[in-house]
Length: 294
Image 1 (cartoon, rainbow, N blue to C red):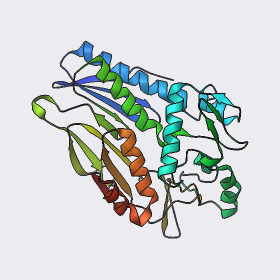
Image 2 (cartoon, rainbow, N blue to C red):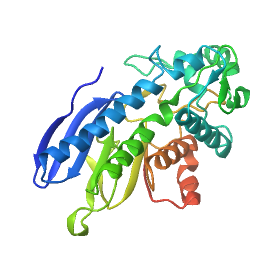
Image 3 (cartoon, rainbow, N blue to C red):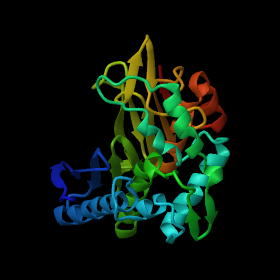
Image 4 (cartoon, rainbow, N blue to C red):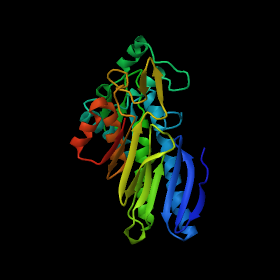
């Protein structure tokens, strides 16, 4: 279900707000022209809804549903690009990022009162995880029986980049797209001023631990601030290792990465979380700017 964004003016900016992909979404346009701003904000919101509808695992009328039924599917060019990116992430991460690992949600329930799963529950799921088991012969994709794909680990960041790309095609106005805290700025504000965005302090939710000046490029954050289980003195976050089925209890509380695109920033922040105590060393090797909180 889609709805038109609410739009308000803040000085020389117009702010559009809507909800998509289970996240609050914002689009900021540097323009005093209300009609132009509304058009650009609606372009971005339509793109967000389109991507959600096409790639959500919760729907029974899209390409992901067809793939997850186990049939041999001829995919379109956009889906092929995402599958290629997923394969690249799997290869570069030595299998730590795997879009076939979404079925672990059957064992892990990150809701109030939840307990960690029994090892035997994970053992039943692990044989159905592993990108190396899929058949990807472009444009045809086939999953073995019992396996699923889930674009949740890259979909929101991809939507941010795609929405901003459409705004850029339509206008030279400076813009920022922010979906659930993952954002991408097209360029600086008037006079070369940066966009200002805050990083939430995971140890004091609601408070900003850092204010970042962003002229161009993207930020993405991964962490366990909202989805975790505490049991026996340990904190289990929702970012799970597809090889073991478990999170790393030595992971940071949150990692924010700056990169040229939101998709790149998102994959790096997620992979950093999977490095556990070595998260900072991993990010140092990538030579990116980051903010890591434990």
